[in-house]
Length: 279
Image 1 (spheres, rainbow, N blue to C red):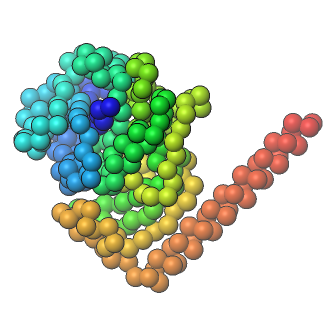
Image 2: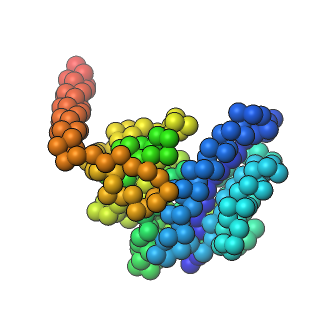
Image 3: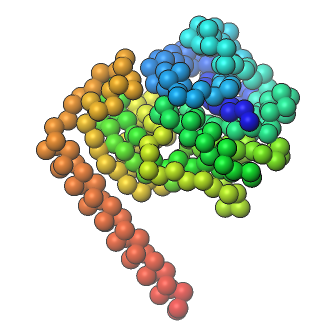
């Protein structure tokens, strides 16, 4: 089965939008392209087992296409696809897979400013070799990075349910792929292969990424901060702020207190719900 990595890069949110023709849009793209070169791209080139195809979807825009093509030149497994007509992204992916007869494949999602550990696709292939049914791969352990001015200021291993780094193994050939559902809204009917021991993905938080936050966030179950210097080898073009052991002990103690507090509030809410139900 072919392993296909899918990335949304610079896509207009509406058919009438011309955001990427504005000064703000150009600056947004240039900033994302900088992160792509330093985080996303090298993480895929350094995979122990590379995907067979990496499809990067962009809005039809000469400036975007030219700059992105220059960065990916020489890598035959990377394909840039321009979107001429706005529609739901899952339909765009479906049309691409159907056109190239790739419905029966492994699809993986990755944002243009995030990254994957070198073992990601090797792990996915190993799981695919063992399963004969459609299967959703859910790697719940990853790394959260806070980057400021090209410097990693904080790093933490986190456990996150249904993270945006899923893979879908499609053996039936049905029109289902990794973007068929929002990453945190997959129906429970699908067989799910979980991986929570080895970190396989890296979520990068920076000043232009307003949808994510460092460490704690939606469906995050645990946070353990580490010294950013421990993972600098993954991003050699970024500087790091080294943290002392004492500072890490203090901050992780606070993370533990936060977790205990959240569990307490959850139990309290559940008890209140039960009482309301009895009334």
